[in-house]
Length: 168
Image 1 (cartoon, rainbow, N blue to C red):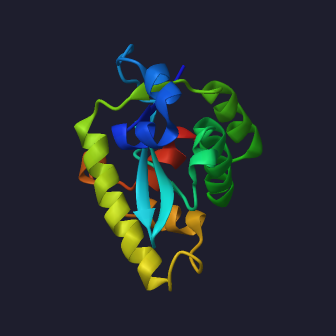
Image 2 (image 1 turned 90 degrees about the vertical axis):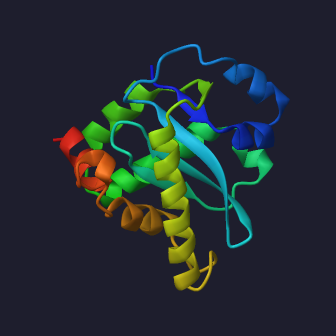
């Protein structure tokens, strides 16, 4: 089962119970794991998710502490929306969500993914600013624009390419 690997900053924002739930890094990272980090965009608390195997980014705007309590549901909903925009078939999306289940929390452990997420957050912040601010920006569109950038970690491919390859 994949894990949702959260940064310390995000775990602290979620509260003590989540810190304990994440515990020590109980399992080795898997390509199906997701990373999540708390980022500030336009003065608002947001979450940036990134899939380990494809480095596919998903940004979710306006995530107050009360919403952070169910990160797996936020991830599933946002991922479904992004896959729909990429025209991945409904049956494949349903299969992916079934495999994801309700991923348990874990701590981050991959510096390449964390560095990629840092680059993504800078790129998304710039895009949000250029769009007129977070109130004018579309989170899914920002995610997909960011996913269209070639990545050295993927051999020059984009994370969109990696996702579509995965579902082909």
